[in-house]
Image 1 (tube, rainbow, N blue to C red):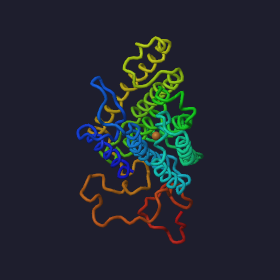
Image 2 (image 1 turned 90 degrees about the vertical axis):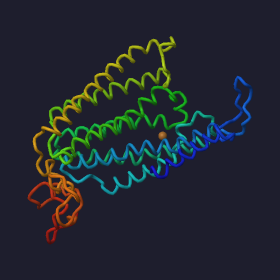
Image 3 (image 1 turned 30 degrees about the vertical axis):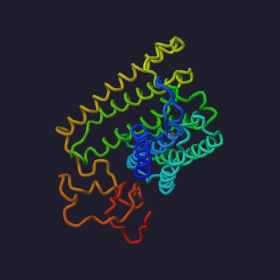
Image 4 (image 1 turned 180 degrees about the horizontal axis):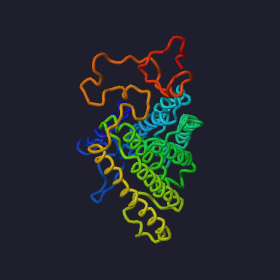
Length: 363
Ligand SMILES: [Cu+2]
């Protein structure tokens, strides 16, 4: 996705340099300055927006998709169940990746672009709700009747599913060209994307750190500090971004340096104070994480070979770091990574390099 989207931004940057220094007018229409009209005319500033958002929307998903992958792994491991709808999960992630390239216009409904074109972008954007919903339902069904183990990584992954839902729902409002008229460039947008993409990506990043920390440092992180970190982080995250939707409904614009200059926003001051308190506490609570991270990396209790009783190959490497990961021959993969609670097995997990027994179904 990066390979396909970043070159477009880079090309537009080149065109911008040419506009500024070589007398071209790719992005300049009739522009009057205090010195009179510019010589260059005939271009379109909206073209720059098109090229920017052709990068901008896929770029959001470049951040989000690894979060979905990490959560799939952590949720299956800690539910002690195969991930529900494995093929649908793969199909959905590919569909989200593909669709992300044909929805950029939903950032531009109010640029004066043709309403028919806007309608096309409404359609493609709303299509993304389908694979996203498939993923959410598959996460929930994976949890359903699982032997759930609430590690900090698991809590952060479930938190990711929560923010993916609550932020996704407001995306349906913003994806609609008509509803977007009153929400565009307000705090509603800020609240929406920070929940669905900012919080989801960060929660899953923490899930990944807590989950693979024993692999990275050979030591365990402190669980209690992890729980404290999770509950304060998610409470403050929601405490910051949910009220922003109401600020947006109230008409407060984003990107203003100083809203107190405008008396019509005064009645929303209290809500902004609430947001600032949650933001301050939320940021401070990250100290629990940093303390836990650095203390555990140096002094934490030694990790066992496979602390989460996971199936995947990384947990078969020796605890001591070594070149090439495995001593001797590379391990051979005999089974998929989700053989949790497989009937007829002595344990509730089977490492991927364990050969299938005679007569054993693959999965
Ligand atoms: Cu977008």
